[in-house]
Length: 164
Image (tube, rainbow, N blue to C red; front, side, top):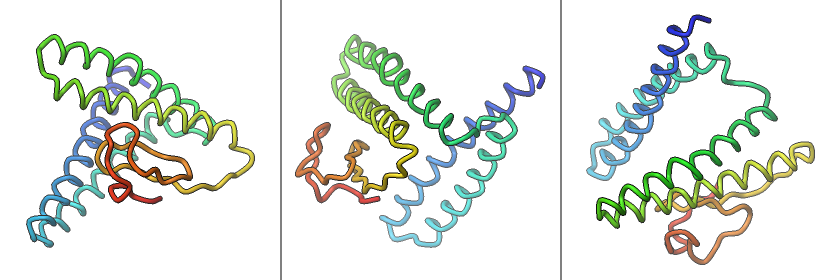
């Protein structure tokens, strides 16, 4: 594939992924403000953006076997936690923005947890182990199998966890 085409599809994928998340957040906000039809519209368009992003990933051949996807996801989480967020934390502190530094620190800690979950899943792939995940709705921390009394990253109470 030509590098320019590959770059264009990658940019399209990034744009679709951003739009998907933004629209899901907008839908939640519309629902909180009691605009159910607007929430529905945001969710419908988010679904459409998800289709576009999925097509982009397929064209880029980014979707591989589950084993390869776990390995790639583990490596990505490790890189983001160890490089990008550390840089963001340093920058925020240098600029005197402790709230931003805290949010970046929490995100980094959660990304490290994601990497551990992927690593564990790779180790148990053949076992087809099932578990329940508990996700902190405040910072995104994921607990594997056990609902903590409070989030070890941000301190949110157990009522703030979603169950998957």
